[in-house]
Amino acid sequence: MLAIFYKEIGSFFSSLVAYITIAAFLVITGLFLWVFPESSILDYGYAGLDSFFNIAPYIFMFLIPAITMRSFAEERKDGTFELLATRPVTDYDIVVGKFLASVAIIMLTLIPTFIYYITVFQLGVTKGNVDTGAVIGSYIGLFLLGSVFVSLGLFASSLGKNQVIAFTIAVFLCFLFFSGFDSFSQILSLQSFSSFLTGLGINQHYQSISRGVLDTRDLIYFLSFCALFILLTKTILGSRKW
Amino acid sequence: MSISVSNLYKDYGQQKAVNGISFEASAGKVLGFLGPNGAGKSTTMKILTCFIPQTSGSARVCGFDVTEAPMEVRKNIGYLPENNPLYLEMYVREALEFICNIHQIPEKKARIKEVIALTGLGEEQYKKISALSKGYRQRVGLAQAILPDPQVLILDEPTSGLDPNQVLGIRSLIRDLGKTKTVILSTHIMQEVEAVCDQVIIINKGKIVANGELNELKMEYPGRSLEEIFIELTSAN
Image 1 (cartoon, rainbow over the protein chains, first blue to last red):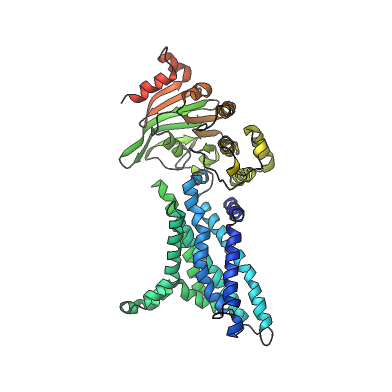
Image 2 (image 1 turned 30 degrees about the vertical axis):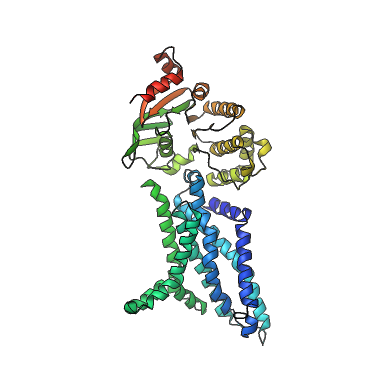
């Protein structure tokens, strides 16, 4: 599993994927947070990172599928998957190794944004007048949300050999699970299930953690979500044996 | 016997890719696996390397059953798949190191150096795989296969697409490896069989049509070249 993890990290950095992802994420969030007037902290006038944590899931929705789309689609297309699968590693090792590598990249994209927090911390009218608990909670929430998107992306990538299709499916799934269920719950005829439907969606759990309250229900939701899609990915990879 | 296959079947829907084959191979010999395209050579190799399971029958490698102990089988096999898939964005040494990590080889540096010398990759070892010519890529594939020092080597068309000089180099390497290990190689180049193999299995439409020592096979059909024997055995229905 570790061998796969290191190999993936190596390929992220040697193929520029990692640098471009990190740079794109920082530029986009930077623009939204400090430059664009509608969401800029400077115009908004409150010492908080709300606009960052509101926009970040939508950026992840496109960036993470871009990171994960090649992971299995390319291996299958080039035939290197056969190389991996005939070595003494289980399919489970392969999936989890790749999952952890992508999650590590997500972590690396989040770390530089701590500077936003430090800036806002300094800018507060009384210095340090920031809801630090909510910021920590939001970071944990964003990280968990990123992990869920990675598991969706890996699943989409395992479905076929075409990276573009993998990307499209992954974006669709991320959108569906992030805000689709919220929207479904508003349909009039589904009113009786509405709290169940929003509970299935990622957004509610993300918002809940963002308030700075680490509820075990939310943690279990995110972890079991990742586990489920890792399992599904492994099952799809195993389908060559059916 | 390091490889023993008995009554192996593999169906793809209606099509029988492998139709009840049985054979054995032992160390110190190079076994040539011959057959026309689509005869079931690659499928058999994929079953032996635990990439896909058989429909029925059994296959054992170094005493381990491919369905019961796939991890043990994989530890004992070096496999060069058809078309030699490689991670093109990796450097040669990086790719070899990755294989070392997967197999948890203790003396990584020493073993990589040894294998690079063995496969003649010395001058190219610091290049990216995508920058290598086809012959050198083939050597990288072979290096990856022999890196964990496996008892059994399974090579699927190891010399396809190489120039004559490269073919000679790879063949002599395979012959050397075959002195101590069990080597199965598939090909449809008859000269290659005559140059490298001790034992020959000819397979047609999923069935074995000939199995024996190369010189025995030739004695059975006196005065005919291997090519003629092959054509006669595989064109008959």
